[in-house]
Length: 601
Image 1 (cartoon, helix red, strand yellow):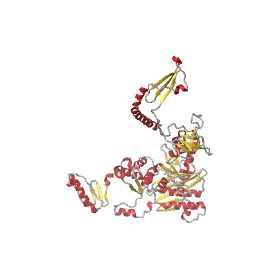
Image 2: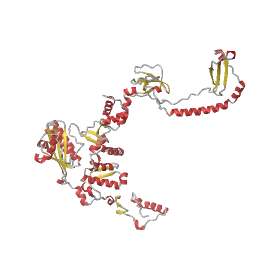
Image 3: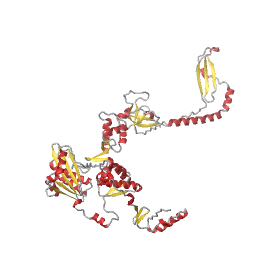
Image 4: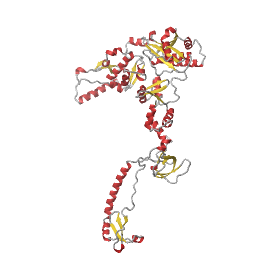
């Protein structure tokens, strides 16, 4: 044997583990190659692995990849994403069996989880989506050289600060916000936002500052400096000027609350000439002009209103885990729920404080909370121009109307089932409601069948009728010609052939046993065939039910087939019940369960 690797959890058990390994090798006659084994390895490269004091690690040479061709023109984030994808492909067993933590200071985590992506990033996001990957900011690298460690821990210089230029503009057509973000390497990211509501110029400038803070947070900046050409806004944020208006105070509180996520931040006033790019973007957004800004960042979770906090959550709903993850990167404590949330998050987006789901047909579907579900379903099902659709058809029409939630099909079926009109006009249920209960005759072999045949042509003694009797068991036939059919003639019907009948009765017990066995087998087959079709419907005293309008016949095409509700007051048997109406009046006769169905309030 050439390759074998022994590893122990504790130093004290290492010798015992080796003895057990060698005993197993000797038991099966396995030989080791002396040129390819070594003992007591503390660090180094061995059999393609890196052995250190921390344990056995993956050899980084196995995942090396040289950029070539179009890959050289990728952006910095795309290169990092490509590195993650290649690593996942080559180390797939590790990624499938462990939770992977990616340490990076870039915005890769936001892009790969819940940002809008396109092109090759979509393919990579789907490919790594099957793994349990968590993105964290990089603090320090294990086993890093001292010089690299010190360079990671020193305070960043001026060049590592992100610069954010903001400006707001208002016109008769509306208000707009322009944001220009310049990264430390000098790359520009431009953003334009339109505010449909009418607000003052000062409020527009505050909205621009909020948009700049939120956009910087989205791109992963940790230190920022905001630049604005409004002296009033910059001095109020710095505390030089006092804000007395109530709305201005709300803006200041919200700005300071959202800026706490940065390690360091500040705001400076600059001349309008130095803020020309942000000013142009704001004016374009306010005037509804065509905006051609090159690379425009679309930040879907920007909120340009101070009336509410980041996302109003008066109570928990099925969207709460998704919102917490998409906004604050918070995951549920349960691992299974956390993985489900991370898997679902890329299909959702937040626009103007509203959660939308990306449908496979193209448009965004507005997500509804539990309180809004019943109103929307009832409006579509039984509102204006209502069609009273079935459960699945109602769910499809709801999605065509632009709505979605987690239990859409179940809630649609529940609303259809409880619809008053649908219950009164629903189809009859033709399947049996109770299991078959066979009835056994108490004396199955002591029965005769009698019939009168005639009149025939008159025979001797004016006889023209024939009274015939047949034994059900022995099939013995007795016949007597009669002139008239009267009560006395039938009662005095003679029992002829007594000798032959006596011989038949001597063998009756044997035939009776065989017939009983055949009868039981036949009844068993009949019950089995019948019970396959049964859909059991059973009710208890106090249940509300509906009964057929006309159990004996058909009803008109447009008439209601069911009426009610009625309350069950007493059970007669397993399939019959006494009912009373809503006014407390009892119905005269019991009703069979075949003519009843459950009523849903």
